[in-house]
Amino acid sequence: MTRLVGLPPVTGPQTRLLVLGSFPGVASLREQHYYGHPQNQFWKILATLWSVDLVAMGYAERLDVVRARGLGIWDVYAACEREGSLDTSIRNAELNDFGRVRRECPGLVAIAHNGGESFRHAKHTQALGLPVHKLPSTSPANASWSFDRKLAAWGEVFRLYGLV
Image (tube, rainbow, N blue to C red; front, side):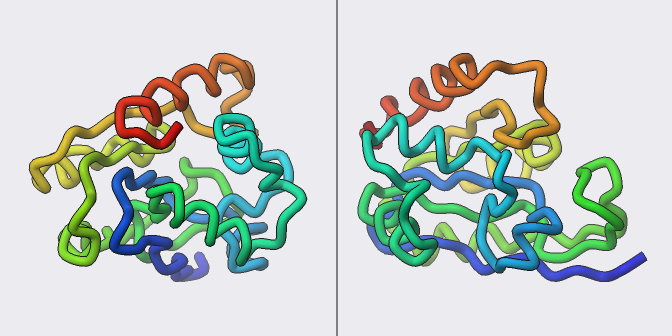
């Protein structure tokens, strides 16, 4: 299997809520963009919650909006072995240093895991002493949740921390 390295965190001093995925898929790694698969609903959910056309923006501009709104983006895994994009194919994973985000983001008040694979590591993020939430995965593999149902769940957590 191929050893893959993830993306750096998208955070800033104003980050209040950190969303943690599991590990970037093939499309995201190729583009070096979080949630780069065109069918992933992450950017569409944010665009709808914030009434901003993030989908039409370039990636750098999207990240500027994310940071300005107090959202951080990262993954639970720093590196792993995997063929394809499915979480079930992840092997020999190395966790990211969550304490780093706590140190670099003094305004951080909560963590939200994007999907079940990410949430499997909630015990590590709970050790930061912050509220931890499980959100439905925005991945196209999570077809059992409608867009509206995902949007409602994400909106509930975002409202708790003043992101909408």
